[in-house]
Image 1 (cartoon, rainbow, N blue to C red):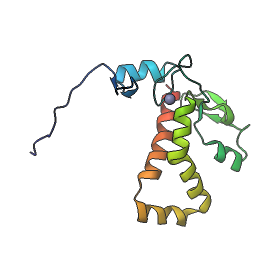
Image 2: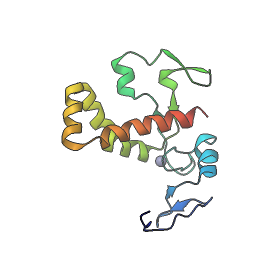
Image 3: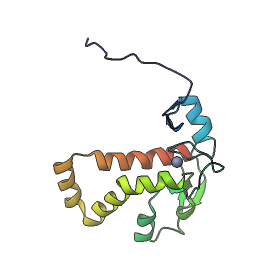
Image 4: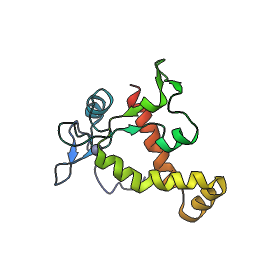
Length: 145
Ligand SMILES: [Zn+2]
């Protein structure tokens, strides 16, 4: 077995950077703060700390493109909601950063079609679509708990 270059530390505490921003939640803290709480699903800040504009689970551009804002969706827990209201708490800073990093580039790729997505993956690998889909799953999964 290869040597592990660092020790794994299991902790029930948040890991923060020098600015006090949360870099990693413990699982119990993630469940309490994000899944059961109303803090930003990315950074964990509360509405008292920063401005929020919430994140649509299904991207707003996709809702517009397919006329879904007023259509209903049944969640895995059986609740029904309108796609336009299907959001997860997200602060404006995180939402803007996600838009810049992967939502806007993925929107452009999807609009360009399947061949553009394939070309992007061949040229740049799958990090962009993987990150975008991961955020969709995280947002949808955290919101349905
Ligand atoms: Zn945030």
